[in-house]
Length: 230
Figure: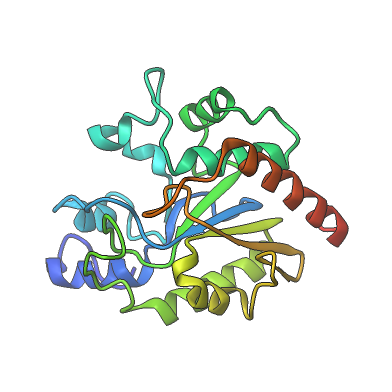
């Protein structure tokens, strides 16, 4: 990070976070997800915490956020399944040929999800949190720069899959993967199978079933194997 968190103004840190903070987990992992933006609302002290405690890292170990009571309820022995993460984890588990029911997804979330040395990485098109797309935010301010950086990292780390969720921003995700998805929502980028699906918690309409996400994970595995990436 070019600015020092302890000396920079809140406004400088806010802008730098929007430019640089890409997501949670292990950027070197081979199983990637990408959403539209962090959900909810950022705590007032979050940008400065990111700049100082996390040293302005592009991708952070989300499990270090256990000191945040809001975040901590999703980790540890008393965790509950987070409604967006759960289907994503089931997809990942099914991709690996493991049990992918809700109990297994909760176990993985509780013990491994967002770990800085783990098997997954969750990225966002925008670094600024918002409850939904109807809420105004500077979500597009650094979109082009962030898209380019994620593409660079994908070329470097060569994940087996990149699962994009949020069809309302299809054009933005197609910029990310370098072209249109096919009629089934897939596009191959080198060794990476990219997919575009509905958000696990859609604003309108019924959510996709647990069985659907498991089937998606198995389909991603078949497509990845066909590319010879594994």
